[in-house]
Image (cartoon, rainbow, N blue to C red):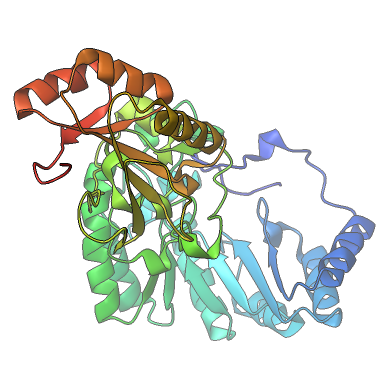
Length: 403
């Protein structure tokens, strides 16, 4: 995990890990197990793996001998020159994931914690490309660079035309940046810039990627879920496990994209109040019309008067409930209790429409059951008062619903 840079935002800082390099016999055992599992793509990361020249070459050659077809090197590229890149390519490196942190040298050097790093990194990228190694760039947007996403893409298109992929990461509140929120980008600034950067990238045939350490979909990615690692079609099974690092709050509760997005880092909600996050498409319950309704990334099932078995692929339930029907309410409570243990993006959420006169007591009952979203009869002012008192998301129940 040793590294020759000192990025102030590093998520896996060297000081958190033993300083020794992995012994050759351990590497061999890891490779053997990797190949036995059927893997064909290997990523070698660190720290900075190029600090160990001969061990790195031995590892790459051995991986290729064992049949691994794609070998990626994650690197800051400052130690790479043309001879060394040719050496790596001949050993078997097929691609490189390079942390070019900014299109501007002073900003890159500040974020890398190493003076002169930008010039050497650019030279290393060009050397990799010259050796036939495919390069994906990884800017990690921080507060200092949060407005430079379009400029970054324009720079790559102009100065590094051999690069066809950019993975747009952002500083996350972990590692060295855990206690320095001044480094975290503001999604209200970065999100609009990502939209413009995506437009520029399309014009130059560059593919932009939104990785796990990137952004919530609403921060620039809601129109390109296909290149967002968390945006998995819920009908194919569980999405990416966010390991408890992220949560859906506030605007996420009414967002149709909640099934494809892990939300934001916990600390971004507490420290920044979710700045820049908004529902690009509202979840709209189908109180009338077809029983099953596909609505973009959500799939609604309407239940009127009684609880019904869930259809395949359903992500949201619109349940019309009449006060006094304790059996249906008990079924709804059991359903919500089972959902709590699942990641928010995988939960089958419930919107409860109450077919009757609204009251504080009815709202309190729904909250006690675990309902977070209600549809009630009443004017906007009274519903707003109930929402403030309960902390629930409350909306009008259409007049056409019910008898």
